[in-house]
Length: 178
Image 1: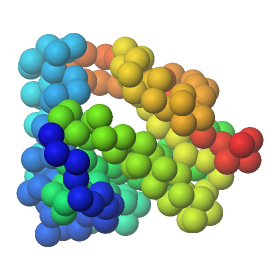
Image 2: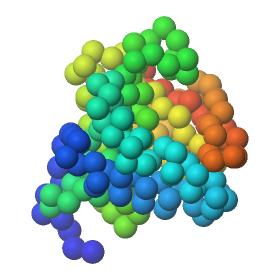
Image 3: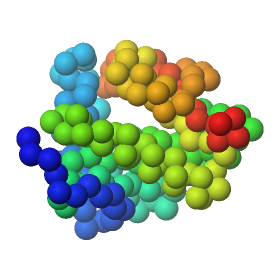
């Protein structure tokens, strides 16, 4: 693969819906299909990453989606969600990093690192005290990535993937403790 000439991040809007759907479904499938039942993956994608669902998420002002682009081509994305959640760290004004995915063939370019740094800067600039996320307990690659970025586990919660009840680690980066 040739080195890209430019890497950029930009907000996703409604005109990007088709690209967001395609990228969301591909990256989710690639990330989890090998470790889960096919029917659970397909059900999750159908229920949570459909055009209808993602359109609803895009027009919800509590959500901020961003593409990461190589030479103006989206190869990854993330979703930051504001608003209260029972799972967020107690006592902190925090934003959730709900999704962060990069197409497999571009993961060696440190685009995940670029996205997480953007998310952290976004959260700080918006006045949040912390950023938090849920990550599947069996996704050791992602857990190590978040730990390298300073995230620590503070709890767990259940996550339903199709009909499979799984456990996610809840992790946070508390800006007050840096």
